[in-house]
Amino acid sequence: MNVLIDNSELFLTGFKNTGILFIISAFFALILGTIVAGMRVSPAPAMRAAGTFYVNAVRNTPLTLILAFFALGYPQLGLPQISFMNAAIVGLSLYTATYVCEAIRSGINTVSVGQSEAARAIGLPFIPTLTLIVLPQAFRSVVPPLFSVFIALLKNTTVAAGFSVLEAGAIRAYLSERGEPLLPGLLWVALIFILLVLGILSPLQRYLEKKWKVAR
Amino acid sequence: MTNPVHAPALVELKDVNKHYSTLHVLQNINLQVAKGEVLVVLGPSGSGKSTLCRTINRLETIDTGSITIDGKELPKEGKALANLRADVGMVFQSFNLFAHKTILENVTLGPIKVKGMSKADAEKLALSLLERVGVGHQSAKLPAQLSGGQQQRVAIARALAMKPKVMLFDEPTSALDPEMINEVLDVMVELAKEGMTMVVVTHEMGFARKAADRVIFMADGQIVEEASPEEFFTNPQTARAKDFLSKILTNG
Image 1 (cartoon, rainbow over the protein chains, first blue to last red):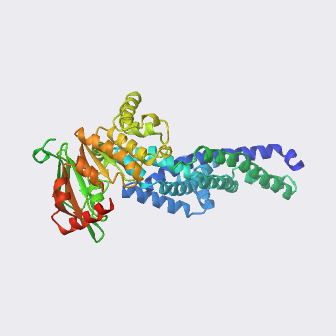
Image 2 (cartoon, rainbow over the protein chains, first blue to last red):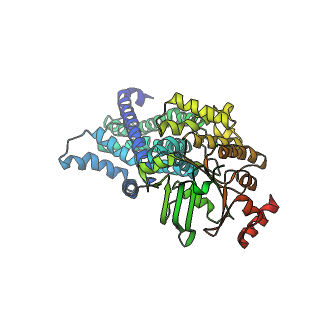
Image 3 (tube, rainbow over the protein chains, first blue to last red):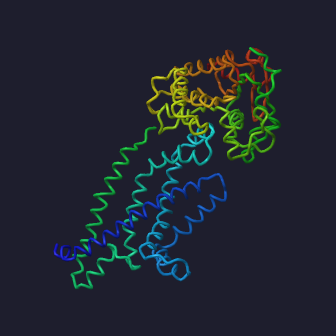
């Protein structure tokens, strides 16, 4: 307990930044992932190809490399500079979006073809068919895998610690600098992560699953 | 009833061909449907009748030939195709009501999103149509809470809400329990009487006799016979049609 109380400002800053990384990255990953999923089921071959290329390229690259690119490689391109925090948000969003996309795409596959045929038959073009009919039903069936993706994102934020972002994954390093015992510090970080998942994400998942229970 | 043969064609298929890989599912189909005509398409399963029906609003593409509706050739894709589909009502075998929307929303969606009608007007229209097909009091429910027959009648109302020029029915009663078939057929007979142009793929001989102006019989991707319902049922010309009729008439 002493480790936690003596270094409360470190834990607070660390987890505050973890929270910021998580919420902003989850938001952009959800939007981008949904758009890419839409591209991958679009009738236009060029859109499908672009979506597939993005997912294959980014999903198959280690997250560490992606973050390294934005934190270390990007500044050398001579483009407007961004903070390490923003670099981490961009990297995490782009990376997580591929998983969101694939989760949503599997959900789209559970919506019967008849639903989109009926939508097209009353004259809805592709995008409203997707946004009004297919996606709302697809989301309902992908709540569990989507939350797995977001839980993974929450934990993946710790990779950003390696690129100068003071978030929860960096707490350990700061603790050792201060000469605190290593093991209790690590356990506290792990415990808080578990509490975040069990206390916030899991109840939210249960709530959404209940609210959107699919009636077929 | 008007004599459909001399009226101008509302739907016209010219030399339509379609393949599924090596299977030639539609072979040189030539067909005209006049305004106000009720055409029943019969045939054994795999004969291409559903495919034919679905090409008319391009849910199935065709390889060669042309399909025109009210003088306009079916657009290939995009906004023009969507606009044309709004004029062609479609009723599916499996109803395909939007599962996450209420009955009322199912019917108002098209008028609001496609035609830009105000919500109030769309609801008024939808309620009158739902009333007409006998499910007015179910409007707040979700599709899964209705019986198959009720769902199919809602699907008809949904199609009618777009004020279509022609209605396509793709085996509308095939997925229904026997006791619900008539409630759907009754609605269709009413529509036919009111002068709606209809293309109906069905096995319901009763409907064909009661409401059809003309029957076409398909087999192996071709239109094999074309006659008035009375003629077709009492005096089929080809062996295939005779064989088909002997099977369905003994069963029904």
